[in-house]
Structure formats: structure tokens, C-alpha cells
Length: 181
Image 1 (tube, one colour):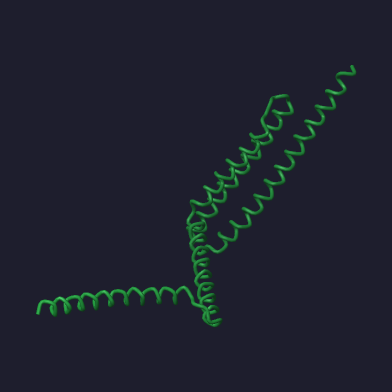
Image 2 (spheres, rainbow, N blue to C red; image 1 turned 120 degrees about the vertical axis):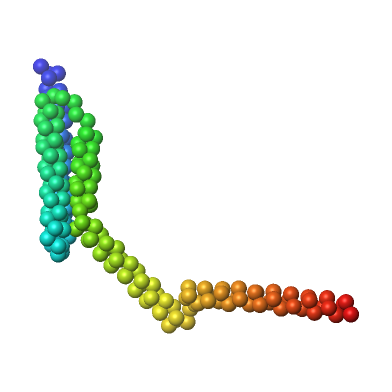
């Protein structure tokens, strides 16, 4: 009987660890879903076209269904584990990773997501252009050479080398002509 008590304590520790992992995974799932819903509602809220809005809602519904199926899988695998079946902890991680991939695929294939992504890329490019202009202006104000200045100097050097080469060729022809006489 003394042997069963340490085994019972070990079992309790294992079950407690599983419970903690399950609760952590469930909390992370809920947070991920909340973030997903928030970002998706922002994208769908900005949709102006009824078809685009409808497609966006449909994509969200598919993604939500995918998350709910993953939650069901987690509950089933946890029950299997509690019933004595050996379930690898990595299987839980894989369920969430595969679910995230599937849910994002559901969302990313919509017109609303494509429009939102296009707008975001456009905004980033615009901000990048503004930052570049500001840095060029700051360098000029401080008296430093800008990238444009360096390119201009390089272009001028290439043009000077081209002209120098042309002058050297003409000079060589003149010298040849004088030597021939």
C-alpha cells in the first residue's frame, strides 16, 4: 500500500500538469480568438462593398468554425488523456498550429483581407517615402551629402571620364597626324 501512495502522488502531479497545460492552451486560444475577431472586425467594418462584406463575414465564420473544431479536439484529446490514453503534449501544440494556419487561410482568401492588406502596404510605402524625404532634408540641413548627392557626383565622374577618354582619343589622332608629317 505504501507503493500506491507515491504512484498516486505522481499521477496527481501529472494530471495537475496536464490541467495547467490545458488551461494555458485554452486561455491562449481565447486570446488568439479575441485578437482575431478584433482585427477581422476592423477589416470587415471598413468594407464598403456588400459582396465584399458578405464574403468577409463568410471567411470569418469559416475561421471561427475552425477554431471551435480545434477546441473540441482539445477537449476530446484531454478526455482521452484522462482516460489513460497516452497523448503526446506536442499533439496539443500541433492542433493549435494547424488550426491557426487553417483559420488564417480562411480569412486571407477573402477580398476584404486583400483590400486591407493592400491598404496597409500602401500606407507603409507612403510612410517609408516620407521618412526617406525627411532624412534627406535633415542631411541637407546639416550640410551632409545625401544619397542623391552621392549618385549625382558619381554620374558627373562617369561623364568626366567619358569626356576625358574622348579628348585623349582626339589628342592621339592629332599626335599621329603630326608624326606622319
